[in-house]
Structures are given as structure tokens and as C-alpha cells.
Image (cartoon, rainbow over all chains, first blue to last red; front, side, top):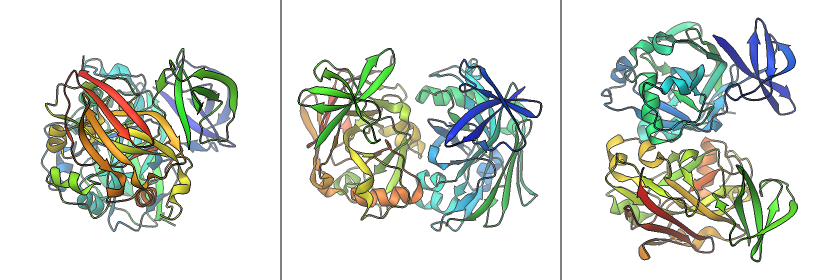
Length: 255
Length: 255
């Protein structure tokens, strides 16, 4: 298991880094490229962590846990139900989720995020994990009322700040049975496990890459377990994925 | 009116260029940045044109012409109906639209593409055109059967090669009354005009930027007029936008 971060170096510069103990060793490129350490290192404590990926696309999966499909009154899909969030919706850990006025019901959705490590198209389930670089935490923030009203989920899922991602990127773990939890103000709201995914990670990668080429750094949000519910100004939302980390974001009205 | 292209320089390198007469003068950066000519130039004839944008997102608008909404049996929307195509779906002029086996009905959709020139969020309709760099042609290729079946349009609109874009990027024109046409094998199939847009370009930019930050180079596909219909292997599809150009793509089965 290796852990990576992406850090703010000031003046608009960012760098990927590999965690060694409590220190981050900077990398010359993205960790999924053939890259090397620059020799520079900084303490993890005090480093300003950015979202650990800058994907060319964020592919999300709806209704991928049975109990969650049921709680919203939906059937279990027979094929993966895909949608996109725009890269502009990504924020890092500790950044603020902003609630737009257009919605009166905005929900947390804790998810395991899969980060692609190599370009792939039409890969088999057997080979799918060869194209995964690692895992991170995602909060698929959703304006539930607009999701119902609009039909297409573009707006409901796509507002700025609606895709908290991070804080870290973890490689070399088995994603098939990880606890996925959400806490709001310390209180457990979602408590699922990736073993209950309707479409497994390998099935998702095979399906998605059968439609569109996946690029290094692309992010797949694998769906949310039962227990979604509203967030409000002043809340602190935490998405915790076992072995991957805890993503914490405060909530406020859009200014 | 100024015309720009993006050209293949070999070995995976690309460059933007400004058209002067029949020659392309290379630029050091993207034309919407503060950039300069490199001094190098190549003839337009023989240059390998790439898609003129590499957007961080492609925001598309459904049912934005009354007669088109009607032809598919849909109501006219009361607000813009947004969806995304992934950047991986972009191909250049003369590249091949590949028909995936999963669909038995794949349609052309000729559209005016708007290219954003500067980062913007929550801009007013009055100021919207200040953030537009220019215009290009887009074919919003759509698997009509999967669009109906899936509910979300992600797959139907998102296959590789489903977003032919180009060939050129034109600035300094008035987009409010441009003919938008599609020909298949030389035969006119769509013959609309942007004056019939339900939501104008300024309204679209105000609406979209009210949801998500638009980045320089982002592409908005403004919707397709009446006359959509199927394409088949062996066809040649042309999208023509008045004053902007003609985008030509052959069609074949996915190999």
C-alpha cells in the first residue's frame, strides 16, 4: 500500500507527492506516469492538500447499491447507470461545499472513487484492475429536488463544489470489501460496504471503457450506499472509506 | 472575423495557429490566452487539422429548437436541458464516426459550438458574449435507442467518436442568425437557423455559468434543429454552420 497526495506549492503551482512516514516526497510528474522524486520533501502536517486528481472526466454510477436504489423508490438497474460530474465541481478536503439557492434539498453521497492509471478502452473484467492506479474518497453531492425536476442529472450533480475528492490517493489495496461511511456533524448517516455493489469495480471499468476511452487520472465514482440525506449550512460532512481515508468538508450557503 | 486552427505537428505535438490568407501562422499558446506568433507558418492546404479545442468539459443543450423537440415527441423545455459529452468523444474533421454494435439507431445532430475564452461563473446575459472566444461546428452524434433506454444520456451521447468538432474556430461573428445544416452523402437533412434557438447563446451562458464555472476552451453545443436522422456505415456526414465552416466525417462500424 502506497499513499500519494497532490499539494499546493504556492503561486498556482501543484505537485504530486508520495507519502513516506509523515513526510511527502515530491514527484516530478503524476504518480501513474513513469516519474521520479525531485529530492524535495515537506511534512504532511501543514501541507495544503489539493484534490489528488485532475480528471479529464468524472464518470459516476447511479443506484449501485440495492438498499440505496430502494430508499429513493427506484428499481435496481440491469446495466450500470452512468452520469458525469464536471471537473469544475471538484473541491479538495476541507474546502467548503456551497449550497446553491436553486435547490432546497441537497444530499451527501459517500462513495469509493477509482482513479485510472493508464489509458484503456474496451477492457475485459479480467484485465480491468490492471488499469486502476488507486482509490480515493468522493462525496457525490446532489441537489435531490433538481435531480427529479430536470430529468437529466447534469445540473443536480454538477454545481461548483459538488464533488469533494480526496484527501489522499491510495494504491495496492483490495477494493472488494471496503466500508464506505458518511458522517454529518459526527453522526453516522451512511454505513455501507463495497461488497454490496451491484456492479463491481471490474464490471464498471469493463462497461464504461466499452463506451468511452478512459484516460490516466480519470475518476470513477462507484455509487453510494443506503442512508443519503440532506446537508445544511454549518454542517461538517465526512466521507470515510476503509483503508483509503476520511474526506471532511464544511457546508455553507453559496455566497 | 479571425480564423484559428489547431494542427498536428507530428510526434504527438499540437499547435494552435491563426489563418492569414491561405497560410497558418503558428501560435505559442492557445488563441484565447495572451499569446504570440512563433514566426513559423505552414500552408492550410496539407496541414493536418485537429479538433480546434480540447475542452475541460462539453456542455450540451437538448431540445433547443422547437421543431426538433416536436419531431421526437418532446415538450419544449422551460429551462435549458443540459447534458455532457466526455472529451474522449471528440474527433476532428475527416476522422471517422464509429458506430458501436450496442445501438441500432445512431443519428446526426448538426449544431453551432460556442468556445469559451475566459473563465466565468454566474455571468449575466448582458455580459455573456464577453466570455465567448469563438464558434465552431459540432455533430452531437446520438444513439437514439440507447438514449431512450438508459434514461440518462451519458452512454447514448458519450461513445468515442460521437463528438466531431471543427474544422476551424472563428471569432468576431454575430451568432444570432446563422444557418445550421446537415448533409448526409450530399443530401440536405437538417436546415435550421440559430435565430430559432429557444434559449439564446447569451441565455445559455448565463444559465450554465450559474451552475458551473466555465473554463477557457470549454465547448457548449447549443442544440440541433429539426431533421435528425440515422447515419449508416459508408455515409459521409457534413455539418455546416454559416460563416463558421463545414465539418465532414465518414462513418463506419466500430472495428
